[in-house]
Image (tube, rainbow, N blue to C red; front, side):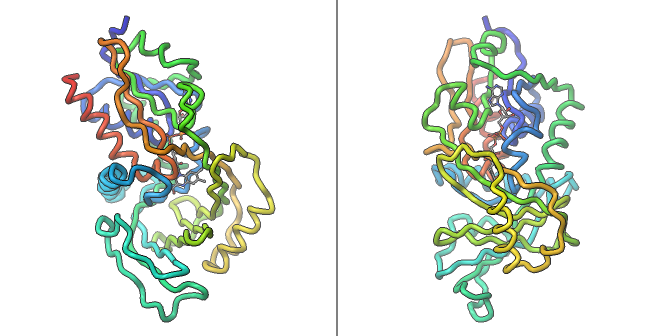
Length: 321
Ligand SMILES: Cc1cc2nc3c(=O)[nH]c(=O)nc-3n(C[C@H](O)[C@H](O)[C@H](O)COP(=O)(O)OP(=O)(O)OC[C@H]3O[C@@H](n4cnc5c(N)ncnc54)[C@H](O)[C@@H]3O)c2cc1C
């Protein structure tokens, strides 16, 4: 029988940690259960760029992204570890329309086509948040623990293990929900990145090419520089492809020669939780229990996290909890 007034959050990726943080800020008492601490999550592999990427439905993703952008701006101004606002340039092989999110970001403008590196025909410049997850996730966990949140490491075989003890359970298990719930709509989008030493200043630009099947990014962060990447739908492969890691560096160097001298800190691979749509909804179980799912954020968990976390809080408040 569910009785505790404490909310149980499952998962310590960016979605679990942001959800737990927003719940605590709204006055809820929270316990966290997780199969792995932040170091072992997909969120730790993430490049940490605010950019709505491989996520559906876009009409829900945009307001979540906008909320997250505002939260990151506040956190960067407050000096939260790992969070910075950085200039970014995105290159295209062919001219494009403004993206849906162009009005949200600071300083969005198209650059003159003359002078762009070959073979690009268009480029947009703007400012975006970048979260160095290696600094940010441990900081979020530590802040929660300082506020009394207990993190228990336990792989759940079923959410019923918690719904019998807690009247409110929030499921933030990412791709883990495929096994935990049998959600066959979830699929991996495999990505490999090369993490290199940090570039000297926070003014170093993020560079992105995501056009006509080419994906190249260089993301200077507080503690490192992320060079990528790949996005292979349906692949569960987490072993590092060494040849690919070298090729990624070579491709990136053409656009960003200063990375050549940086030491390689790690090559990593992770599985984005792909889904036809983010699952952020209440599931009806027993009347006295509330189970809310918050998973399936694809390539945009960092980009959506604070908006989704706020929606969970609003859902509970609307239920009078
Ligand atoms: C190479 C790469 C680059 C990326 N770059 C970006 C980027 O620049 N910007 C961006 O917005 N997104 C990016 N992403 C996507 C982003 O990483 C994901 O959307 C995000 O990490 C999903 O977060 P999550 O908390 O839902 O899942 P996860 O980080 O996977 O966390 C899931 C948590 O649930 C726990 N769990 C799972 N199953 C169970 C169980 N049965 N019992 C208990 N606990 C369980 C896990 O232990 C873990 O703690 C990238 C991803 C990859 C792979």
